[in-house]
Length: 437
Ligand code: HSE
Image (tube, rainbow, N blue to C red; front, side, top):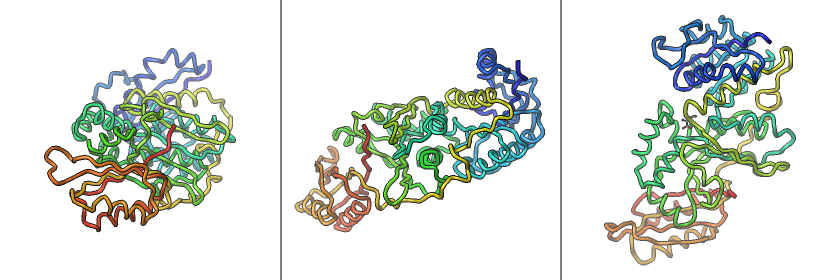
């Protein structure tokens, strides 16, 4: 049998501890699959004493992850520290420079430094695997990196944040407040250390930037993403969406348009009958549309220790199975030097349908004024519905409009005009509608 693969793990939080447990509990099966043992020989974590449900007594401890990366007797450095800079970046760079394979679950790190790290990995002829960085346990990186050669992707979109999907699902199913659902997600260990990262869409944006690069062969452009989170989604939006045959999801969407690539993260109305609308709770889903394959939808557990550990262990096993001396495939599906500069499509040119919810004074002429602003901006309406805003609403009414395909620029101008007309009693709500089968 080949020599054991020596694994060093930096970071023993929820995911790191799960990875160590899976490697221990499934040792015999992994040995059968890989033809060699997978042994954790070194670890680095802040707290040595914590019970992690696994015996790491034989592993060498390092206080400094970069030292582990450079000096430990390891073949693979597994980075589960998190954070886009600081110790994670230093340690991953050190490992790659030292000619060690790297496995990471760190989407923020890849979103910021992925291309530079890929250049080092490719120069050194080592693997940089990151399946767990996007959509938890779903093998979407492997699918896009290895299984879609020759396909031209036109759009990739998905539910990439378990915390947001959990919150929106529970808000809809149980009529609970946003805050109550967020607390529950945190209690269950889905949310990031700072939950604004999840709910304001940054986590989704990091993951989307990686998928965009794989989809379109472009350099990662995590700062060029249009971003809106879910913290202003209310029960009124969820109910109105339901009445119109839609469900609200936080989607990350990357799409090729005539003027460039659109990258956007925002709450989105998808038809209730679409497959992606059936993705509930912490589950993630990624839809990929290509010229050869058509539409592929992958869905599965997107957050939590075990789902993430499954992807990390899969990446380690791939390294264990790779042949020594074999030239490893490029990190983003094509050599890093071949990645093209990112050409951004302006959000104002985005074309699609829109849901607009307005809370207005109940007086004569309001409907006519709204309709005029729409017509002035050449927006064609699919429906316009009026409800009382609630039993105590008095002289307020809610008007919900759904547009046919129009542009972001037209909608922004129309809503600005309606606001100026002085008929609104609250902030207007605008939610984009996404085409989905
Ligand atoms: N906080 C993330 C989520 C976990 O909710 O999906 C994995 O990135």
